[in-house]
Length: 461
Figure 1 (cartoon, rainbow, N blue to C red):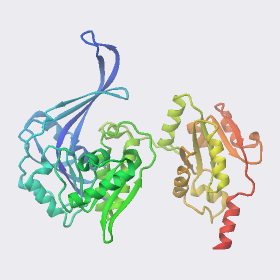
Figure 2: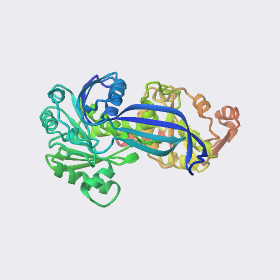
Figure 3: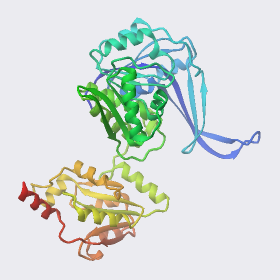
Figure 4: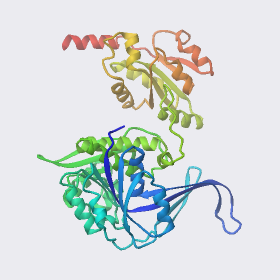
């Protein structure tokens, strides 16, 4: 985990309620589903959700907000036991957003007290809370805290010595000039700029436009599961950089933008420059979604189960493919220097089913097999290169000299290997037989090997 930091979260706070249940009948009063409630989960929303995330990460968090004088405001305070709350009076009832879900499907959202209120007044304690922190996050949910003149003045002072991340809202305030980075999503950026286009070209134009319009140092337009495009001012003009997101299997995206902003702020406070900080935020948001999103933040949520030799993304992939009646294919190796023979073998293996999981020897495993000078590339680099291939859907790293234990964790239907031997000669055949899996060989391409490639590189180096 990163060092313990002092972070101020500024913005609008509400109460989020997630009601989940089952529905097997229609109401006799109207043709609408009847939901049998199974769970009723409550959490601080808006800026309160950002504060929750950072407190769970172990940081010292101060939430600068306004709250109503009602029982729901009291409930929000109770939901933030590890957060210092500096709140002025909102003058209105505490807003509540209730989402009703049946299984994995959203049924309806019910908003209470969510009309836009007048801009609240800021207390001296609220503005003073920004004076001695390592980072500031503005979580603007369009209810006026970020528009309060005294709050904006305090944020402007903070920009002189503290990284400030601003997560904007279409109905909210314009970011304060000079902040470190603003993080609109693509939909928000489109509303702010009214630009056309799609994807990275649109995000590049929108970031450039918003850097100028808002007079900020950088803008990161987030593109969902694709990643983010950062536009920032440099000594040579505006620099644009695309930062791809790791591939994950995710469902409900609620809170992903908050998680990204929090990750960016933590990285900036730790000394990262803006592109590296946004890359860290993108990775944090992806990991958050892979862990279950907002459900992973519940006080009684079980800790993610770490399965030796198999990561959760691979398990989710295998479960999804198998649930749909598909065939899970696996192959394995060191893949120390990726070459054309590897690419052909992997492509052929993928053609045998509906997903391909590569079992990859870890660095220590490669050393056991190949000697102390190997591997040439670290396992992280080898994982990244394999995942860049369209034919590879997931990578599992294992420490043993054989992948047998990893295979037993997710039990592929097919084990594929390239080579000039028969299927029954492969040592994994015995393991696959334990659950009725099949072993298949795919075409072998002589003359292409890691050893020959390494020798060729050494001759010219």
